[in-house]
Image (cartoon, rainbow, N blue to C red; front, side):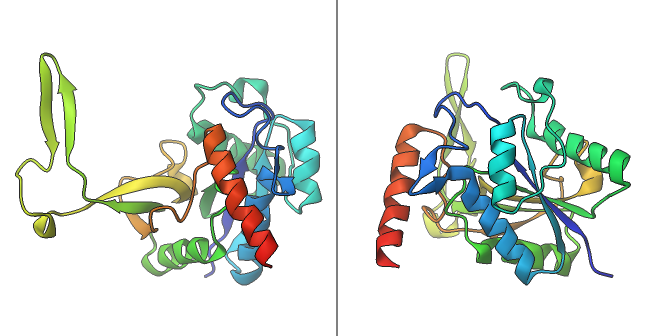
Length: 231
């Protein structure tokens, strides 16, 4: 039986580091439009992607999202737009509203952020394929990390990883979340949006840029502008 996957894209009207970033013009289009279009292209190629919904508190974001083909079946309550509200609560709110108003419940939730305008269709499809093949509780995107880490303690620093120093070719790498893809069975969302038992889609460093700061926006805008010129 085919699984139903609901894409949820959280996009607030206001932001702190980059004012109005979800509607900010990025190489000719609102920044949020890139991930909406990417999600819809995935929907065209994978039957498991059932719906693409934007969760927002903003009528302006709602209008933009609908213009680019996403659903916006509700306006997110203001109490779910505060900076300290975990994304998990936003996802669960969407599931609760859809269950209450439409008796709709997907098998998986695919969380995609507007701050990933460079994320490729192929990587998302890879995550979907992995989840379906392995019946994964969660699939998330990450980069391989062979760094050495220390944790601050009272009076100094303690080695955190690796505990035993070895030559780099023998060190077991870590998977470092890069914030691009989170695909999780809906039954786990109330507790966490990455289940304890998860599979990983690995991405190259620099393949996705998370647009959190003005300098990130400038880097991505340059990449997209050059891509537009080449096409």
